Image 1: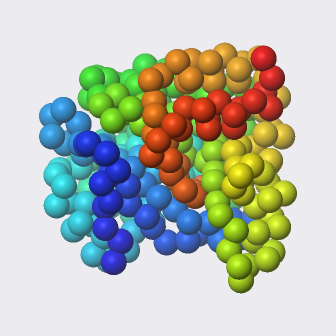
Image 2 (image 1 turned 45 degrees about the horizontal axis):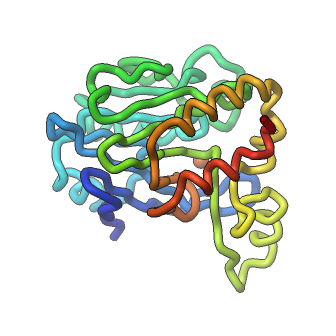
Length: 240
Ligand SMILES: [Fe+2]
């Protein structure tokens, strides 16, 4: 049974099932933050499993269900049906975008409270900062910074895996994608679709100005110390 794992003060991660994408299985993870008002903020809620909900509810009342990338919007539906009172927040491409009509995203007719931009809503502005990573017309991912624990939270844009001895094809794919340690970082397919690198550099400069030391990612291994230097390296391909 998956349980929330305390990552730092006021912030937990919870691992979900593996999901199938591009012919490979990817692990999933969501982030839970206890806001100053004691309510829970969830990013990239994982596909639901029976029993998992109780574990989350034991931490507090869920106030906000947040998704930072259009690729994870499909996961919101089941959470919304279980927690209809929780506010829904989607990335800039939640509505009216080519991506949302493709297979990647699926349902988008949920009653969103708001679309995320560079200003955190009042509900969590005291605890969490955020910005849209620009420069990629296909995926405008939203990055989050939990101030109290100095944690950067990213959904897809950085991934980080170890090789697994019995999965040679998966290992080869992850190496080619540039997401295997020690060269883990931004997946190759996402790098390719950054068409405006100057805009991307501006976003990453702002992101690097956040005082973070820890990194939570939705796919792969998180970092609990010195994450700042890792993230800086992961975006070096954007140039200066
Ligand atoms: Fe993802």
